Image 1 (cartoon, rainbow, N blue to C red):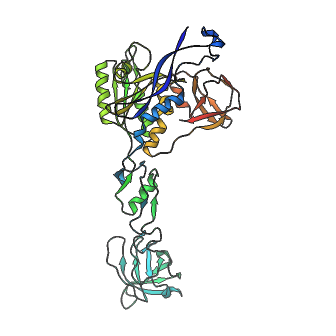
Image 2: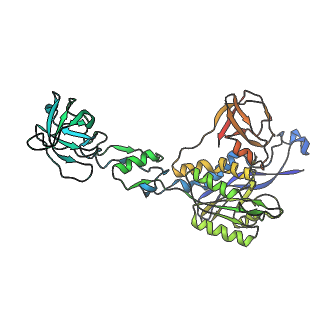
Length: 448
């Protein structure tokens, strides 16, 4: 009986004792007439080979489960932008820290300026900054600058534009000021704690710190904050054909975009990228780079070298070390691999640039985000702006763009169409058993 190769999920124990989902490649007789079978032999229709997206995602989630257990980390407030707060942050002090002036002007007793105009003796000047606390007496004023401590006894500040400076020596004691607008108690005075009081929660646990949060943390005198630690990730790209951007290309060479792209996606989703390396197709070189990466990071992601060709260095090196490789019923991004090296999980993605990105978005992005303390990015339902066709047996992840009339494709399914990723803002997720969808039908879209 003819047979076809396919993958089914099973469970095995890793050398670290964790239960890891894996693929076991098996032979299975096909029962459809077109493959030499008959209805009596089982009556089941042909199923395309490979794991489903859900099956492979379950494998990856189990492999990366340790990433979700994080140890909090104290970082400088100056370096905390973009970090996720581990626990509620409370203010250690009142704000304002002391009674201070809201305006440049004169500190007075409100009762002295209830009837205007009135001339008051000026008993000194208080500037913002360190200074001795002074006391005001009835019939006098103290010149005061914005932010300066309000003298004891004063209960109002008269802005300088509501005064007229009298000539020096116009009172027996010297300088004087004429107040032309009356003021009530509390006018232009910022009371201690009128913004927040000590013990007030400033930032909630789980908040991603933005510049506005940094401002309040600094204002209350905090120099550090406890945040969720970021998962550390090492990226390895592979291929004899890859060279750095800016290099002069020889025939057959291409620029290495996958390293920079994966690093950018990882950082955008909360990871700390500790290294980005590239290996040729030399097995010894790749093995050394792989083990170095596994020792320095909590997760290693490779691109390339996982297909069915003659120079698949990742598969050739990682396979004998316990790596598991197979096909996922998804386009782009079909070839996939997983492994554990030196106790570190390794995700092996295909090397075509679009396949690499789609693999990260579907299989790794939300796991990395959860490890970093960020919210998951979930798909949503949107109508199609036009009809589309798809390949039966492959779950299509089509590059598309949202518009007023729904979502429109910007390119075909080819994994080499890199520019379309820049034009797109979503992936349209077409189920593997769907071959056609009409305009107006709802589809699931995955934000890029």
